[in-house]
Length: 112
Image (cartoon, rainbow, N blue to C red; front, side):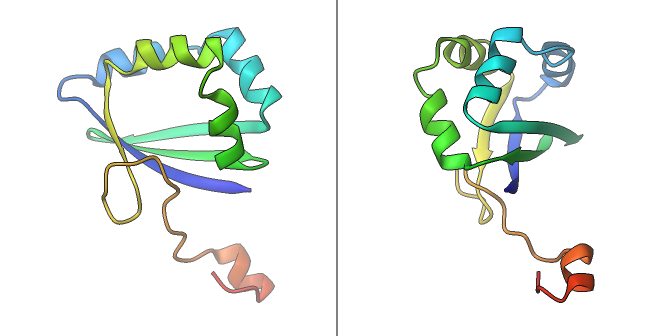
């Protein structure tokens, strides 16, 4: 499954966030692989971040990472830069964005 997420940086945090993502810790990468996260890409527009995550099951992966030592350490570190995750309606929570349209799906005749 591929899901998109939206988060927002704290004011003035762009450079720190960018620096933190020059390379994520190897143990976090290993944890991602263990819980079925195959790929994660982040784009930025101003203080808005858009994440594209390719994983087996996002909810299961996030649950498995909740107490994972590598993820706990990463969240403690990266949290100084990230203000909040937002869902498709703008509420403060980590939830996939609504997929509105896909060219590939249109061409395949499978809807959005």
